[in-house]
Image (cartoon, rainbow, N blue to C red; front, top):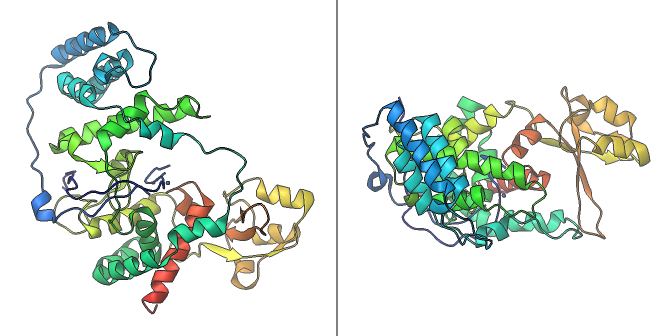
Length: 398
C-alpha cells in the first residue's frame, strides 16, 4: 500500500500570486516557491508513536481544554499565542480524540504555530467596484515564461503525461495547464509554513470577510487533516511550505485533497507532490476524474450571441453550472456553431468581462469546463488553464 509520506521543500522563494487550489479547493487561487530537492534526499521515515490508553488520552484532552480555557484573549489579533487561546486548545483536544492522536503532541504543535499577519490581509476580499477583465487576467498566466516552462515540463514528463491521459482520460494539455497556472511547473510552490498559515486561518480568519464563519470552519478542517496525516507520516508539520492558504506542491493541493486524491504515480511507494512531477501529474488527473471529468468531451464551445433581456438573464442565472441543452440555448438566442450544436450534455453560458468598456466574452461551458472550476471556482481561472495548455501544446507541435 502506498504510504502517505510528505516531502519537505528545501529551496523556496517568496509567495507572489494567489490562485486557490483545488485541490481547494477553493483547489481554491497560485502561491509561489522553487522546486524541491531530489526525491532521494527528501524521503521521510514513518515514526512509531506509543499511544496512551483512550481513557488517559481523554483525561489529557480534558486537562488541555481546561488549561486553554484559563487563558484570557487580548483584543489585538494574533497577540495571544495559540497555546493560550481557549478555542485553539479545545480544538487540539477534539482533534486528538477524533483521530486517536497524542493530545500533548497536537496541543504543542498548535501552540508552536505562529500568527502570520499578512495571511488575513491576503484573504480579505478585494474592494468592490473594479470591473473584471479577462484580457488582463489571461495575460498573467498565458504568457511566454509559462509557455516555455510548460514546453520543458512536457518534454521532461511526456511518458507520465501520456500514461495519465490514457489511465484517467484527462488530456495532457489540461494537466500541463493546471500545473503551469498554479506554480509555473514547481518553480513557485509557496514560502509560508503550512502549519502557521492554517493555524492563522483557523483562529484569526478576517472577520470582515462575507463568509468568515464558513471559511473558518473550512480551514479548521484543513488544519485537522494536516495534523492527522503529518503525524501518521512521521513528518514534522513545520517542515512543509506552501501557499498562504495552506496549499502544497506542484499542483497546490490542500491537505484534504492530498488525503483524498493524491496518488503515487511514479511507483516508488510514496506520494511526493513537491519533488515528483509524475505524482503531481497523476494526482491532478485523479482529482479531475473525482470531480466529474468526462473523457473525450470538449471543455467549451464558441457561441453566436443574440440573447437579450430576460433570455440572457435566464441563461446567465446558473452561472458556470451546466443546465441547458444546445437547443434550449438556441431558443433563447445563443447559437452554437459546428459541433457545439450537437453537444449531447448540459451546457452553461459563461460570461467573462473585459473591463468596464470592453465587450464581454461568451462561451458555452461543458461539464468538463465545470470540472476545472472545481479546482478553482472561477471561469477566468478555468479558461486560463485551458488556453495555457493549448499554447504549450502548440509549442510542442501538437
